[in-house]
Length: 542
Ligand SMILES: *[C@@H]1O[C@H](CO)[C@@H](O)[C@H](O)[C@H]1NC(C)=O
Ligand SMILES: *[C@@H]1O[C@H](CO)[C@@H](O)[C@H](O)[C@H]1NC(C)=O
Image (cartoon, rainbow, N blue to C red; front, side):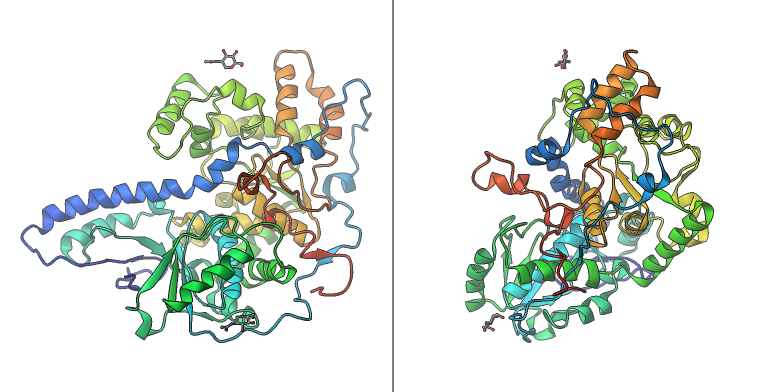
């Protein structure tokens, strides 16, 4: 049985230990602690890694429909002739949006929420963006199932960055807290999100409570792993469980709801939940806003670059281009030792040629120059630790010296409260990325998709998605001397004319894929909530 918070460390922002049972054996306490601690470490490594699964699985799946309709092979012979100085509007302005605007109000037949005595508890898994979209989905699922939603528990994923874990270890020895089998780490919803606002904003849609009523804490629960990308019909059927249970516990929240073919009121509810209700906690929102203002006052416009050149990603994708032998080896060993990453042998050359590698910092630099951004352009790097550090970053900095990190933008004091919480620093990156004039993801992942979708929703703000496959061909020719950097704009610009976040309807599944496999190939609802939450008529608009 899940019990709520039994232990609060001194700082309010935090982790809760959820012990399942306690052991009174004082004599073996120390030995037990060491044992429990190892298990604990194992579980943490395991959960932390498994969290990234969903994101990682996407890597090897080319999106056929997307690459067909979006990528245009460079027209070397025809060669548009762009002027060397691109006008500012072309670099910075949002694509033409045909008078489209957000529309998230429910239709006339939408009924007000009922106060239900049936409860849904949720464990929200994944990184920040998987959690956010998963929570929005759970709001919709609770609505379909006529359930009252208990504020979700969030997976705590930033453990290794959390210096306080040392004190938990010592606490074990002082006996203040006993770590046992099944110990779970979750973080508190209100550390990352504005809990009261979330509850209040969705009042007309579902009932949300902070805690399960006392009398239900010990009631039997149906523990469910909902099918991924399930339909409304699936959840209607799942209502059967209410005959036997008053509480359903949902073990995993990401990708539990289909992208397409859902009632428009359910789709709009997902948008209300994600774009309106699920606001970050006041300290995060306020620092995020401050940092955006600082960027604006420093240099006016800025690009937010999601530079996914991080160790886990490179190891998982097997992308070793440009790295030293010992770095390649290090990444290979990490991959081999990560059990749940299924693909162990990867040919880095083929991987890169297929467009499955994040762009390197140097490649991003060449790319942005080729698009016409002047070297004085202010670029905010939204990312964790860049692999290889300055070695590789310097190749971007040499082209764009005006690079900004959150560490250079915020004071130490401002960052202190966030520094050890990956989810909260990711939230800052999210805010700064959504607000940027131009957003460029170097790789497609959960963050890139979520930010792109949010920007589409807010008015088709410019998001430039690099055509990695096409670019790699060009970079290789550059390397071999067949091309010169000065001729790149002629190739790179036409290649990206249709990759700037202009309005278009969400892509369906890849053609030719039947059965459940097709769900995986669909464009995510949250990557492009058009048409359901973006309309051109005035009805239902915000
Ligand atoms: C569940 O919700 C639907 C739609 O809002 C409503 O028609 C139905 O009466 C509700 N059922 C129960 C048992 O509350
Ligand atoms: C990787 O693939 C490339 C191109 O297909 C090939 O030339 C190379 O030999 C392969 N490398 C290994 C180690 O298999």
